[in-house]
Image (tube, rainbow, N blue to C red; front, side):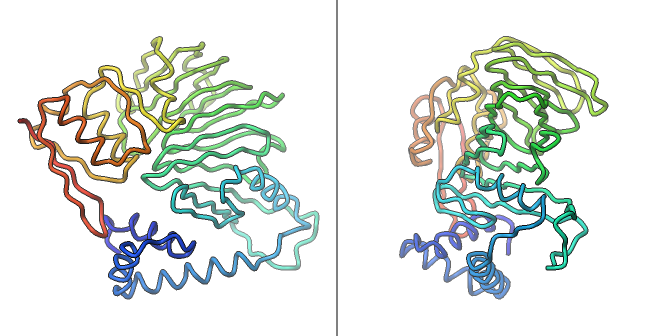
Length: 332
């Protein structure tokens, strides 16, 4: 399967398996299934879905029971254990067993090392609740993972992407690992941006207090409410400043609020939100600044048209069946 068509293939398969596919999408899926690799993968997915639906709950192993309790805390918007993807809230949850084989011979005392991983595809967002009551909002293109014994002895999660946390306060520190660093809190609200393809990582604190630590546990900085730390991942230099937190957490309500932000930063977010590709014909366009609010429930072509009306830009939008739609931005 070609890289650019992968996300669209998964979305079409998801729609088909949940009987949510339109006639137009069905035609597009039929075209993709003419490829033998796609056809084979589609059959494997159907088989996996049927097997999981028919599987019984695992019992008698402590870490599996822990995983079951955690998974049942996931927000119940059509989310089921291990496999549940819907057209409008696509989320894949994997439980990986590290170096073990599942058999019926495990005793109740045996411990299995594993972790859960949540992947949010481009163009989607998700919301979940962890076993300790902590609520987590995951933005598009995010990978979120944690040990299946989360909450028993420690509370550690790993993030690649963007997430907003509303952490339940307990006696155990809550730690978010990202790009070789970690955020450590007891109970608070904060946002973390740490995409693999980004040159910076960012933590924005809404309430409470957080520590930003090095891998060895030493404190890089301590944030107070309305403070934000931006870390240059190349130079490792960090800047702390006061910010309007609404600009950085509004995405959890399905909108992005911009305040004199460069078009390059804005389009990077739009690419993740809408799973599209945006190119600048002239590199200088990337430095143009924009203020405003974008609502995710609005079609992308309407969103991009607003930029054409408000800025001295010409925008060409091309739909690409089986791949990412392309938007070319040039000067008028």
